Image (cartoon, rainbow, N blue to C red; front, side, top):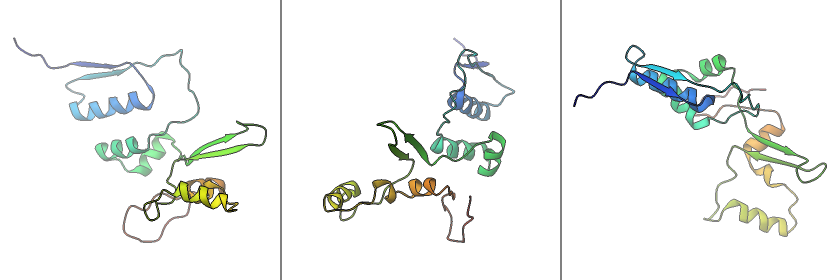
Length: 157
């Protein structure tokens, strides 16, 4: 029995995952050999909370040989440092869930354990103060990660 080449692929989901899948398949298969269709529901509106595609975006740009600057410009993307939760546990409460790391373990002990112990001994500094992305978000500052040799950095406001 002969196997026929795939001529059409339907992706039944829009959003970042659906469109990224379509782009990768188009790049891999070539549009001249296969028709790729993304079906999005008119009933499902834009949620409006933003999508975090950090690892996936870097991978996608590498496959497509796009620079990050052109991707950000073309998609009107923004960089998201975390999620701010205000008034969740009562009026005036605040929690920032960062998309970044807290300090590294010291002597094999996780930083959170050291922070709790320090709080028991009177430390008043909040846990968020030890995460660079939380501090940057609070100060409304941003800088892309330095992935190359140390050469000066561009400051972003």
